[in-house]
Image 1 (cartoon, rainbow, N blue to C red):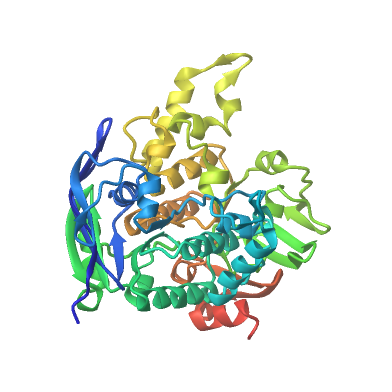
Image 2: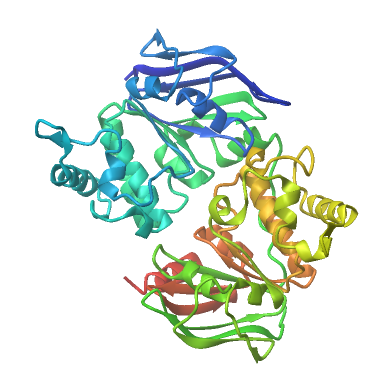
Length: 498
C-alpha cells in the first residue's frame, strides 16, 4: 500500500564559516514510517535536523509538509507544524519534576487566575509514562534520575505533544535492553497511528530491527536512500565511509601481567556492594551490566569522585589513599567519563585548552605559560590520536562526536597514566570513529597502559576485553575470561539469571 509523503526536504544546503555542512541534501519521510538517517559524525545529520526543527535557517532548499511548502523560520513554527525533536543532548530542567518537564510551556491550569493545576498535570504525565511502559514517577525530580531515565523523560515529553513527525537522535544511547524494547514498542504504536519518525543511531542492529527506510549522508552530501529490507550492513557502511571497514575490533593479546589495581570489598550505599576485582598489567578489563547495575558508580569511587563506605583499594600492592580525584591522578590513574559533553570536555573552549587543562603543571612555571611546551604537548596528542581539527584553536563544540571523544582521551593521556578508565568510550560516535578508538586502545595497551572499559555494547565488550566483569544491582556477579566471554554467559550473569 502506498504511503502518504509527510515530509520532503529538497536541495537543502547550509554553510558555516569555513565549513559547508550540507550540500544539496534530500530527505523524504512518509506517514507511519521509520526513516533512519545515517552517516559518520560530521556528515551533516545534526545540521539537517536543526534546520527541520527551526534552530538553523537553510541557505538553500525547500521543505514540504503534506505537499505544501513550509518556511520553518523558528522552533515555534516547527512545533506548530507537528515536528518534535528528541535531541542527543538532553534539554531538561534538572530542578523540576518529570511532569513539569513533560508539560513545560503547556502546563494545565485551573481557576479564574489560571494557576497551574499540579494534580492534573501529575496525573496526565503519569498516564503517558504508564501507557508507554516508562518506569518513572511524575513527581520525581529530574536531577535525581540517571542519564537513561532522563532520556526516557525526553521521550515522554515528545509523546505528550502528539506530533505528526518525531526526530529521535540517538534515543537508545543510555537505555538498557529492556528500555530499548519499551521504546521500540512505543515507536510501533506511533507508526500505527500514522506518525512519521526520523531515527538517528550508530547502532546498526537497531536500524534493521525498527527502521523501514534509510538515507545516508557523507561529508554533508546526499549519498542515497535504501529500503532496509533490501540492503546489508556492509553496503550501508560503504555508503557512510566510502570504503570497507574490516577487522573492526583491535583487542590486544592477553598478557599474564602482575596485579596492578586491587579492589577489595568496596561498598557505597545500595549502588555498590562488596565489590572485589583485580586489574592486571597489560590488559583491557571490561565491565558490563544493565542500567542500575552500579558500573559507573564503581568507577566514580575508583576515580575519587565518591568515597566508599567500606573496603579498600590497592595500587601496586599498597593501599591507595583517596580524598578526591587529584589523589588518583597523582597515582597515574585517569578516567574518561560516561558523558563527554557534561563531564569530559569544556565544549566552548578550544582543543588546546581542553587537552592542557589537566596538565597545567607541565606548561606553567610560576606565573608564566611555556607556550612552546603547550604547542608540543597539544600537537603530540592531535597527531597521536588523529584528531581531525583545523587547528588546536578550534572550539571543541564544532568537532564531530568522535573527535570530541579523542580530545577527552587526549586530555587524560597527556597526564601519562598507567591506568585509564574508559566509561562508554564509543557512545554516540560513528562506525569509523569507533574503529579508531579501538585502535587507540590497543596501542595504549601495547605501550604499557592498562585499561578498564565500561560498555553497554556487547560486541564491544566481547571483542575488546581480555576479561569481563559482570554486575547486577551493585554486585559483581562474575569475572569471565577466554571461551567464557560469550553473549549468553555475559547476559546471564548481568541479569543474575532473571
